[in-house]
Image (cartoon, rainbow, N blue to C red):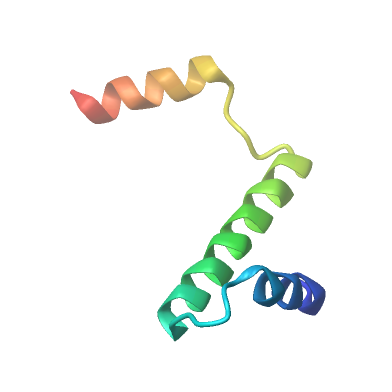
Length: 59
């Protein structure tokens, strides 16, 4: 995560917000960043693989 992303997030927030709201937003950005990096590294499942995993988990 880059400092600029956090600064942009702060600018998008309303004038008043709680620390919890800011932390939630930062955590969301970090999770999105992790997911995008996983895609770049090819660490993804095909739709078929995901459906098979879900079937096993839901049984």
